[in-house]
Structure formats: C-alpha cells, structure tokens
Amino acid sequence: MAKANQRADQKAKAAQDAGQHNMTDYEQARHDFKWEVAEDYNFAIDTIGHWAEEPEKLAMLWVGQDGAVERYTFAHFDEESSRAAHAFEKLGVRKGDRVLLMLPRVVEWWGTMLGLMKLGAIGIPCTTLLTPKDIAYRAEVAEAIGFVSDASGIEKLAQVRDACPTLKVVVSVGEPGDACPEGCVGYHPAVDVASLTWYDRRTKASDPCLIYFTSGTVGYPKMVVHTHASYPVGHTAVTGRYWLDLHPDDLAWNLSEMGWAKAAWSNFFGPWGNGAAIFVQDARGKFDSKATLALLEQHPISVFCAPPTAYRVMVQEDLKSHHFALRHCVGAE
Image (cartoon, rainbow, N blue to C red; front, side, top):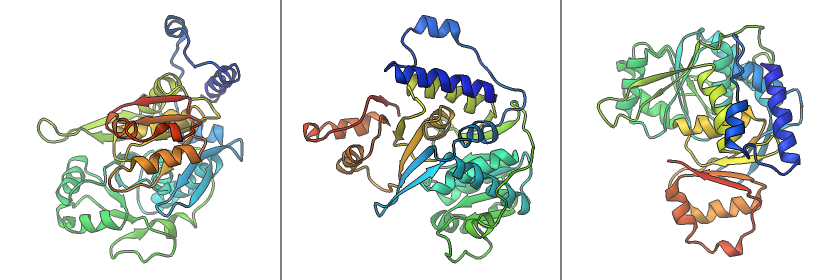
C-alpha cells in the first residue's frame, strides 16, 4: 500500500504543479483507474504513517471556540493514535470491539478514531445531537463496550447508564488537568502517558473498521459496517482525489459535524488519504456566515465543502469585499 500511496502522491503533485485538476478527462480516468489495496491494509498505519515520514507536513489547522489557532502535523497524529491505541488496549478494548465516539470538532476525535483503527477496534461516530435514549439504543444494538465523549455526552449517558449493560469503558475527553466524572477514565491521563510507538500488528482490508447508523427516516436507525478498505480507500481514491480534487499541498474545509458520514468523507479519509491538510473550526451552535467568510479570508483554504443551505446564506453577504484563496468548492447535504 505504501507504493500505491507514493504513486498517488506523485500523480497529484504533478497535476498540481501543472495547474491541472486530478481529472481532466473522465473517460481516460475511468479507463486508467485501478483499485490498489493490500490484503493487510490499515489507514492509520499505512496512510497516516506514510505522510508522517515528512515530520513537518501539516495535517490540521484547528481553530478553537476562542479563536486560537493550533497546527498539527501527520507525525503528531501518528504518535497520538499510537498512544490512544495503547491506552484503549490497557482499558480492555480489543480487536473487533465496538466503541461509540461522540465528540464535537475537537482534535481528540481524530486521535481516538485513528487509535481504534490501529487497535483493530470498531469506531462508531455519533452526532452530538443524540439524546440519552438515542445513546442507549445504539449501545444496545451495537453491543458497544466503550463510549468516548465530552462532559455533555457523559452527562447524557449518565441518564441511561443502567440501560447500557455492555458498556465497560467510558472515556471523558476534556482539557488536560480537568476533573474526570465518576465512573469514567480521563482521555488525557490515559493517553498522554502511553507509548509513542505501536506494535507491528496488521488488520486485513476486509476486517470491519467503523460503523455508521442510518438516519432512521424509515423505522429505527440501522447499523452499516464499513471495512478497512471500503471507506478509507474508496474516499481516498474517489471522493478526495476526484470530487474534492485534492492535492498534497491543499488546505480543505468541510463544515460537517463529526457524527455524520460526510465527516469521514471530507474531514478524514478524503483529505488525509491524499496528503492534504484539513481546516477545522470548533464551531458549536447556529451557522454564522460572516464568521465563516472571515475564516475563509484569513486562512489559505483552497478547497471548501458546505451544504447548499450554507451557500444560500453566504451569498447574501457582500462577497466582493472578501478575498479568498479558494480554487475548488463543492456542496453536499
């Protein structure tokens, strides 16, 4: 898989240097396209590890609720995910175990998801809009043994804790030094002291990697299982390279909240599979078009993905007064 990553990197860089899109001829791209997946592929080990070989390569530009900006490299996430994998293993999480992950746009979401992937455990991203009843339902149906969330999510879980008998590990994500709720393990106390390196363990490309629940438009939400190949490779090769048109030097911003599958497409596998950095704003609450336009102007964001409703609001603003680095914009619900 490393060779496939390198070839994709070289093609994307050549296209970028030539000022070209990744797809200029659909029929030719369709003719030349091949799936390249090793039998023992693991996105966290193979792809993130590949980009981490460049120690200073930017993976994320993160803006907190207070406006503070932090930079994180692929090397950081490679080490953070190894720490997380060791920490979860020490807490009793094993390969194949299912873990609910309900967090806002905080850096620990990515560290946790990558750590679970290295461990071979199955992450289940959940929107922060879930009610206590929703959490209990997902925990029961998935037979989840773990739950990772912030103080708000832990408070919701406490209301239905007795209805979640399979949950053995509850991890609370807060700032380093924060008090941990009773019955929980603090993310930073467990992860920050763990080893920076991971074992030479492999997962098969066909092994289950993550689970998403459907929206439940008809009947109760249903589980959909994705393997280590289906989402990571599919969204690297198609979503990231062709739809988002990402190159290794791009900075991409997708407005999706982390509980939706759209976040996996454009906040995780699509950009990072192609070596592009992601821009993340830890925004909570109602969409703010003025703040969004200001951030687009302040930072070198070259690729932007937003739902049509956001674009409809943004175009009502005085766009002529702004100057952007954007070269490619897409929309999706």
